[in-house]
Length: 123
Image 1 (tube, rainbow, N blue to C red):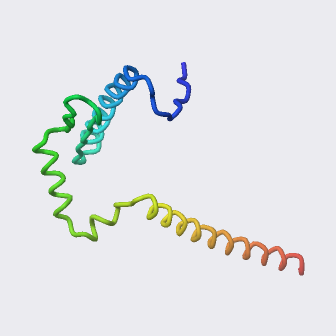
Image 2 (cartoon, rainbow, N blue to C red; image 1 turned 90 degrees about the vertical axis):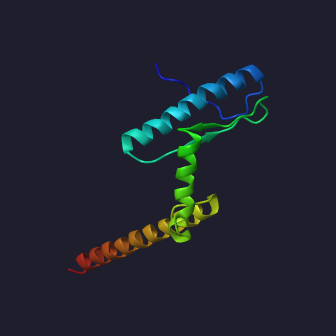
């Protein structure tokens, strides 16, 4: 049986929100582990729960491994680090640029097709 689509709204009930957070946190950490094992890539996750009494962040795989991974990221040159680091504005500008290039290719193809049709009409 298919699940219905989840509405993305803040869960107002405290107990339900905590239960959902715990369940989804476990799923997120499991997915990070699977990504690391199946794809052979180094990965780490840091999850905090604001408003919790002890508010200890959960770190996977360990603080030491996560610190090493973050250190490796910081040691990269800025050009390599920023290559894939996108905020929403940079992502959208790259997407607009890509779509403009695609539009240019399609317009060129349309012009060529129209020229062929005009040439065929003349014959």
